[in-house]
Every structure is written in structure tokens, then in C-alpha cells.
Length: 249
Image 1: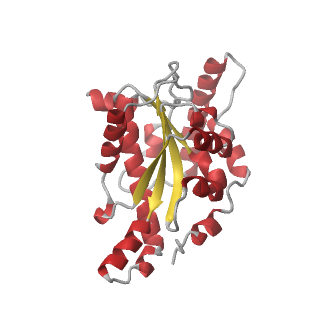
Image 2: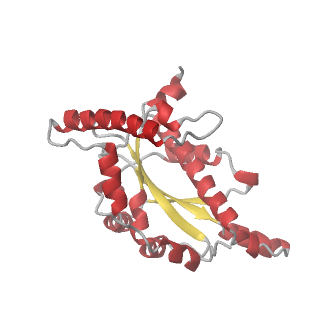
Image 3: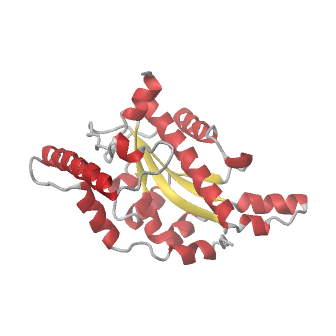
């Protein structure tokens, strides 16, 4: 065990921040940490937009489902999959890169690169005593988000990251059991084993919610996830991705 591992294992989402902006130094450290993440073939297929304009933050908060912590935080970052600069690279060098840029593989590379960079940023922030919360809600209406952030074709905002000084200590949500996530040599496909593991996990999650809400909530993980997956959401995504000239050939 060391400080980095303790920081990782101590993660919890923060949704209430003090009215205290991050310093320029903190922002640079967070971005530099993001840039130090691994990147496939050195392609670096992401960009990060820091949103400081109060009107833009308020509008993004509304689009994300009226999540106040999108507006009220120390700094709000938006992580974008970005292949626009690679189109520019093609023009600079006189190379035909469009077919590659529009491949499903490069789209996946951009998604993975962006996620790796964001997690480095999150860990850097938490190591400085800051709290973070990922905001997937900005994908509720990406057309409007792109207009607010003025992103070009081949750039897709994937999620936000609210960062700041926590107003209060929050509790950690229990994760799936180690043996349910980790497979050795091959994937375990025994449904009965899976169900037993999930039943045990349901008890842990239900106890967590009961304690956190003083008995007002008793959700199980499987019930919560099944209800969520039963409702289709953001089904416009394929058409939107293609409209941004990521045609997934």
C-alpha cells in the first residue's frame, strides 16, 4: 500500500463543492497528468475543454439533467474524442487519412485515449485533496453541447469532469466482488455462479443504501441496473456520431 493506491481505493463521487475556484497551477497539473496517460500509437486523440463561463456552465448543467454540480464547482472540464487534428495532419502532410480517421478502429482509439486521459486527470485531482464527479449527462443532448463548446466535426464531447473542494465527506459505493470481475485465463460463463455472486452483491448494496438513507432506500444492484437498462436512452447516438463525420467504416 502506498499513497497512490490509497487515493485510488478511496475514490468516491462528490456532488457538492465549495465556492472556491481551482488555481491555474492546479489546472495545469491536472491537464499535464491527463496528457501523461498512455495513448495508442502516440495518436493522442482527445481534447479537453475547461468551461469557466458561468452562462455556459449553467446551460450545460441544464442539459445534463439539471445537475447543479455541473455549474457549481471549482472547475469543469469536458473531455472530447478528437480526430479533427488528425484531419489537419493529413492536410499538412498531403496524405489521405480520411478513410483511417473514419474507421471504427480509430473511433475506438479516440474513446479509449480520452477515457485514459480523464482517469489520470481524476487521480491527479484526488491526490491534491480535491473531489471529482464524472458527468455523462452531457450526452443527453450533444448537438446543443457542441454548439455551446463550438466543437468542429470529428470532435465529440464524451463526458464532463466536475472538480473542486468537497463540501462534505461522501460514502464509497461498494463495487462488484473481485471474483466476479477478475477471470483467470478464460471468461467464466457459468450463469449459476454469476447469479450467486450477484445475489451476494445485492445484499451488500442493499445494506449500503439502507445505512446511507436510514432505511428509506433498499435498492439492489441488479434491480437498479435492470430498471435502468429497460429504459432506452440516448438512442440518437449512432446518427449523431456519423453526423460528426466519424462514419465508423
